[in-house]
Length: 124
Image: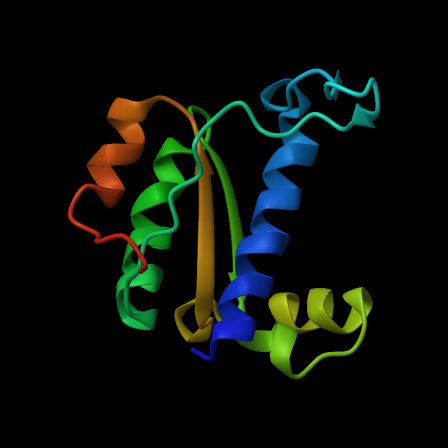
């Protein structure tokens, strides 16, 4: 994927995880001049790489674990749709086996997340 699309995918997924888990955002702070700064995530957010078929495989394997994990996925329809309603319709009308994932974000226990991502390399 082009770097801009990778950055956008990471941003969208991060915002969505943050919405579901606002507790991962630290307290606002001030700098040495007393100027305010918004809190940022208190957790590391590794960006891992994988192929589209691998993302699809991982996504399907995650389904039984969704009570224990927060899973946010993004399909490539973001490239061809212009509104959230169009994106939602594309998700609804595309057979699941034909969904093309460009990213998946996970939040949960390190052990369970590593079960699905431990063999993926860091994006560099």
